[in-house]
Length: 224
Ligand SMILES: [Zn+2]
Ligand SMILES: [Zn+2]
Image (spheres, helix red, strand yellow):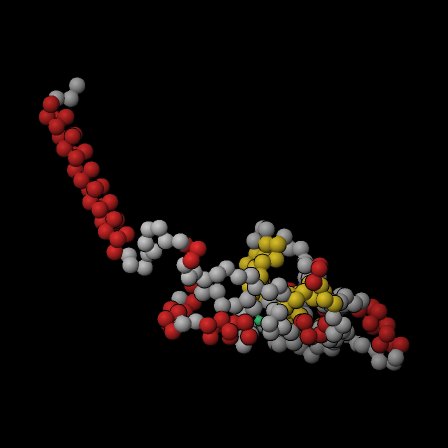
């Protein structure tokens, strides 16, 4: 059973704690009142000049034309221009056996290392250039509707992938840069992550946008 002194000490502690809480709340109220940027009570928030949410134009979707290297080899032979396997003069130019051309399926014997050891390959059969990292099955590629450059996948999530146009000369990006005020430009220099100036696009569920698939005959360019 606590004695009277202990009860008084306990209550004094409680009062001290309440005093601290009151001080903190009072500081908070002062901070709220001092924030001049905050809209006053009763402001119609729909009238405030916030950046409007906008949706970017959807990307151009291109279906990759698939070829069969065996047929291409045969066609070349038929016109007396047979395509021979790559002759390698030293082992540094060897292409790993696991690498195949994603466009025509040609095995490593028909592939060149296109840029030394940086992982880009060139197919001798169909002329496709491709990168080690994206040599696996890819049925579509996405292109920026403003500059027509390839969109890069910047994030992979379970429900969707996020693509972005990284082209600094893209008209979309250039326009968004021009639209910045001087103050925003200053902030952009130090903290670019506050701004969304580049076209980006979320591809849901890894499913291609079949309704806007454009098939192009000259697929050569899409490997660059
Ligand atoms: Zn090929
Ligand atoms: Zn672009």
